[in-house]
Image (cartoon, rainbow, N blue to C red):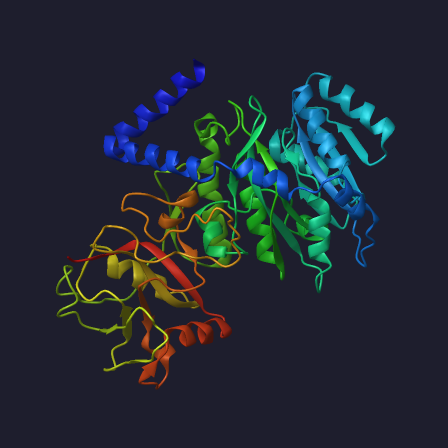
Length: 484
């Protein structure tokens, strides 16, 4: 009954702010997503190592076998959750680990259990704190106990899945060891004891990290970088991981993504995974974490909340003046050369004119939203911007093309092509700023990046821009609709 009342309350607050239609779309999209992932748990069980594979992993001798310190800030952890968390770490097939638990609990429940484990396994390093220092302070205390070359972040009621550390160390042995590694994750329902809502993530995507803390769990980073970054900051409690990940990745030269679900985030009434409104302060902390990151990077921008908790939008300022005579079509605009290209897009297209900007589009009859030019131009003001891509809907009011980030391995194929207008897509990606693997059906580019060429192949242009260090940015707030 409590869950039902809470769900009704959240729904009512959403209706008051965004309306009944938006709520209906959110509920329907969530239902459709649950159906698409109906076979997820069976799939996951098929991916996890069986007993034979686990023993094989234990016998592997890596050339690079770092000690990994797993940091656990504990506070009044329920006994069952605590034991399951500890077991999930100690039973890893890669055994060079230490479990550093810093306990801020006023009671001795965690102490009794953790010390019992420590007596049996020297890899458990337990510290009872004199007082509760908060999530950041407790994690810093755990970091102070760590001696490994790398540290990993594990919440006191979550689980590492079998083979997690093995897969991470295997990735670290692929070429020069990385400064940081992260994995895919899912959620765990403690009442039904089932896994759900897998998060299949992209390779490192700095723009997407500004939109939300997609890295989250399981994150492993060199201890020296964690210390150099300054550890965890109390003023960002609730989003301390997001702030910490920003500061670590800013210092990291090589960041690896292991595209496997290796971490389970436990959902319950007081967790942000199970009830986002249980810790609304966390989302304001996340907003400030993004703003602090932008300031450190010298990137001007205003961070705004979206209608989805924990997901943000960065408004980048534009300093250019582009006079648009009509926002209804492209007839009569100045400063922009519009180039139409066919769906094959492998053919070279001819570029006429010498305007400062070139808009490539597959839509010949289009309507655009009022902020279309402002969003794309603001994006291109950034020095590393190669293309600024719009969100494009066809005549059927569905996305005309997929929105793809590099490194996403989603066996349930929850792509964006064909997504209905008004829907946000998998983890709201249709509405989030990000770096793309390939452009959408409409993108703006600075003429200077095309050089003196009069013809261009879009795929070849993408390849050349990436080789030069430019990014293909997606600006979902620049929207184009194909006319009937």
